[in-house]
Image (cartoon, rainbow over all chains, first blue to last red; front, side):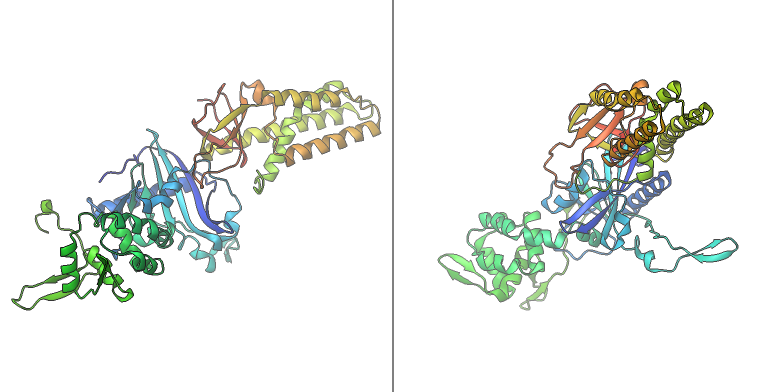
Length: 306
Length: 186
């Protein structure tokens, strides 16, 4: 996967931070001099190098997967889960705020926006952990032949960003950073009614009322729903096969007026079945085994079975 | 611009002083009988040179530090008429004052102080006849409604050699203050 941006031909670098205030989360522009801009450029290069070293053919971000600390993933900018990051990437004329760093506790991320010679734009975002982490430390420096405490607020840039956003994709290096900055948890919970509506249209023979109520309060169930929707795993589900897999993997249901009704205790099991996480194998004759996969990946034919 | 705190207060004050510097040129030419020329001319020269030197320094510092950002034009308004207002509201009334006695001089300086404060307080520090002399125009840029809740809603002032700015145009500008930006001639 290529980055739709030329990191060797940056013509403009802007810095900003995301902060919590009474209206929720906002992003503001903070002026930065040439040396900071250079450091931000180096961070972006380092991020892309780390992504390329991790995987040149990244998988798409899947909200139901348990991703590693550092894992190169991508998410199309058109995906609803990336709406928050897309809005940041496309926002213009961000409000300048030269006093925002006076209240470092409110800062939850920092970002840089780059423009290259061709006019392509790249947004790079990092969760502000280390950035304000040094504030609590006693920093000292050598002044007039003696060590002195640095009284001013000092901030520390990291070596790389958590994610890069170009014209088409969100390139993720740290999935946890992406989920935190993009407020993925709340976005996924908010998206439950929409996702239920989408799935329900294709799987009309399942009663989704109880499932929707359950998922609205349980983030993992909401993540499964988001994953099922994102991967379009709800399409062409065969009722008989679904009943068979549910039965063989211990997911109980009742049938009422032609619809499958799942009790609260079996909602997660049903979602795991739909998300291809619950399965049965029979390598030993007459001794079927049931498994639940914490992580799963579709085997691609072109990958030679690996 | 409600709710936004404009930074660079000292810089804006010096830019306001730069914008009123033509008045001191006129006063220096005219002179006053109550203050010896050596002092009055020195004062006027200082009031002309120091703020304008600062303005030049501010622009050069912004260029050197690459203190730049991109602005997207929503609606742009050319404010050439502001210079006329400036000329008639400030230069001519003050120039008409004869400064013939200490009370007249004190009143003129007090009046000037009020105007400087108003220019500084209302962020009118872009109102500078020098920009017009060097062929720059002053535009007010209003944001466009792009449906993005994160896009800024502030109005900006852009000093540019361009004769017009069209809606949707992206311009790269140097920061003179948080709301006043300068586009250098290519």
